[in-house]
Length: 517
Image (cartoon, one colour):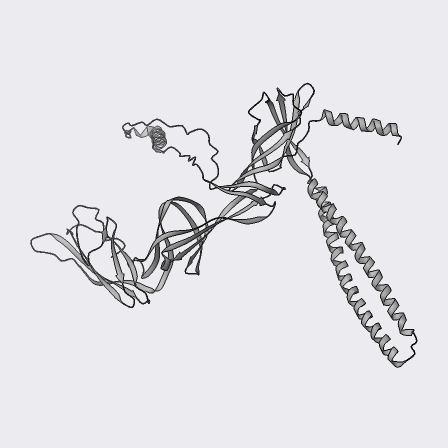
């Protein structure tokens, strides 16, 4: 090609560049991760190309939602965005392709060096093998020559074996890199090309910031909750398992974690009218009109059902943001990031419900200085270094109750001492029944414990049923559903509770005594 042809070709390239809007390279500055998505904040500098109108282009990754794009221009100035158009485009991972080609070049250079080393070692072996035919003057010289030949041949063979092994590894790596390059070069993903139409601009360069939602990324909370009764604390640690598959490594981005997915509803639900009116009663109709009566009843029933149905509730709950500072998050991989380590003050005791089973559960009553919001996630529960297992965990507020399994050294049993019924009297037509239970709390451990015992309270659903309670000792707490005793049980000792209940009701009343007969 002549010099003049090169010059014409060069001018043509320049003209084409000037006619096409410039696609600027953007940098991710801030990422807010939600459980199943992310809000990405990027900044860039656009260079508008003007003919009849000024336009510039930015590109969003394939997983981006172009409908969520929000573009911001500098507040000072008269530049405005008149229009924004999004269209899918086919793109290749040029950075990945360039990196693979770089690795292949380096591997090929290493292969040539290894091959040259092997040729040198073969030459050394030929030289020393040729020395076996050399003549020596004395027996001592023969021994020296034989020793030198053996030593150098042995060394050369060892180095040759290592070089051949290295060459095999290089060949395998080259084959793998070439396959990855072929795959990357042959695959095209659909990205989003955003064309901005700009007015009021006479600048060659305009700073631009924008945000958008990105799929294929998120985070999960991981917890460790350890009970330390001797220290009267619950040790709580919170890590985040984060991931992203944008195809680009996030380097030194401001990383935030949101505890809940952002609400998508922007309008409140419609509120139906509250109508109070008499119910329509079914009217008697002639037999011949049974079909019409059925139709009317179905229509009225449908109207009643539509009025009785409660309005559906949509909760647009706000969410908390945890700022983790500047972080690197590699594409396509999971990594754990520390959020917090805390020690929560707690009061420990054992809790038992002997009417259900004799086990005593370790209970921690946690009280925090300020309210906490811990989203639901998997937690490992531990007590004094012993792992109890995994289960769902969440916490909201400043107070809460946590349970850490049972102790085989603490048992609380409930035994029926007496169950008398149907005591009829001469002057009164009534029926009676009395129960007597003995609750035994036994501490077989080597340390004193505090024990909370809960027993159900029978609840009468008819005012003619009279109930009388006698307990020794008296419960420390009582409500409509349960009796509560708080006991100090020394090591190796036991405590006894007597629980007596008497019932009186009309003799002709058929009574359901419930689950505890």
